[in-house]
Length: 171
Length: 195
Image (cartoon, rainbow over all chains, first blue to last red; front, side):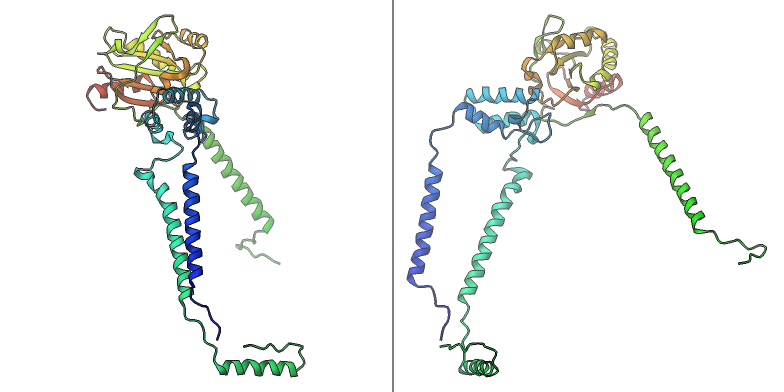
């Protein structure tokens, strides 16, 4: 009788190895920051996430409007003064409101923008895992002697009828 | 086919279609004329009060040279209601509101009364000065080099107007062209503590 065999020890080991390799790769990737960003790089990164207040849907990094230029200068000055990204964001929000940030804040009404995608991904992965687990743990279908005899008779009948079909021997 | 007396002959399809076309054309013409009349006679755009983070906060400082060649410091005007107006000569709503501001400044010319200060927004000083002179504006207008004052006030585009209390608190922020009457209304309301 053939069927799906339960996972053997090698299969479990391969899963463990896969998880370990993935974890190490993520750890190495996260820790490989290289040199800390320069003040200019930091200012550029902040500018790219600040909305131009007098434009339509573009960042101050991509705009030449006077308001965008003034914000770029302010961001650069505050970075040079040693302020953190969140301090600079807070200053701009205190002037223009939260809409000045192209990246929504993680708190308040906009938190769902950050929470929903990872939550949906987690639910999808959990659902897929459960479905695969159920499929694997399902009892294999047993083939009875009557079934085999039925198949043999059908194949013999087709061969006699001259359909050209080959008789396939099954174990 | 014979038609007896008192019996209406059936309308021919072509005639009926012509009547329908005339009706549709007539209604379209009347609707178009009404729309043109509505657009031509509608009131000009006016300022709207906007709720921004600065309202209720200490007014950012305004210091710098003025178009007339002097210097200005908002802190020196503590104890008076101050109307801060961001403007530019190239901005049509600013041109629209300028006579209203002139009227407001004239009505409040008494010493200690509400004062008006302009802040030049993204405009050449010479052009802005010419604009002020040509409209008879006599209030100080501060040159905002680099747009730092506009940034401190969260200005997106002119005209924008702020009312600053005698204690130096921003009590209202308006977007769009102001009128003399609107400024008086909001000032009176602010003095009553209604803002």
